[in-house]
Image (cartoon, rainbow, N blue to C red):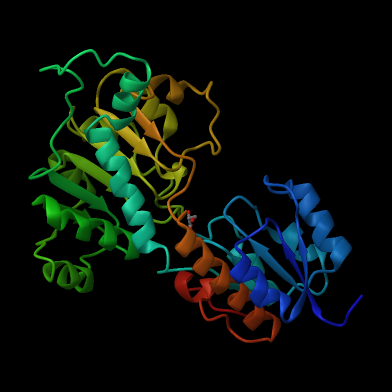
Length: 338
Ligand code: DGY
């Protein structure tokens, strides 16, 4: 064993991030494409007596993981979201936690728009139509979708990703509504520079008025199943729901029912509850006509994932040195460190 700090990575990550760690630490990487089970994660952290942990949204990092190694003092998650980490437990134990805010906002917003457009213009169905040799002629009523331009866009949560998502509406002459914990004047001013006059309203009003509803809130106790039966009922029958945030923000059973009964036109999802979701789940019976779905790839561009890996490595290194990580999750979550 070297006297370098030991860092355990729960997955292979982009080379740039790995290189930052390898320069200073003894690095161990879980070799499989699917993450270690929680039990295995606890075992590996214990076996290695890890000083640092480099994880991601698929790993549940709770007190059991934290207590597995007496040396653990830094956790870096390669994600902006930290709902998979027990932050209170980390704070109590003096373990630093870093995440990756900001860097993935634009990439995730791009994906949100890809989903919105795919749902509105039936891109997956259109692709299958061609692939299945159903394209026999130009059809006046074939694969009619709904217009995006001049429609009303409802952005639920105008944080970093929500603001980037809203900004992209400028090219489509859309009316933009948003709900948030309170009016976000800074984001409104940013959007105004792009000619967007974002109107703050309560979630209920947003659901009543929007043609497209896109979710950008973090997963918290208050936002768990924020969109349930009542909210889906409120949405107009022709509306499209986009979720690039967290699956648990939507009540999946209520969504299945809303699609079945045509309460909304389409759901375009990058996240789901459960996640991953199997092809035999009742939700999947609605694809592709009423459901477009991607496997949690919001931040999955080569550039962004590489930057996320470097940020995560730098967060871990700072924690190992006993410093506050440059992107501290405690700071973001408003948690006082012990
Ligand atoms: C995040 O960063 O929280 C995403 O969900 C994964 O990229």
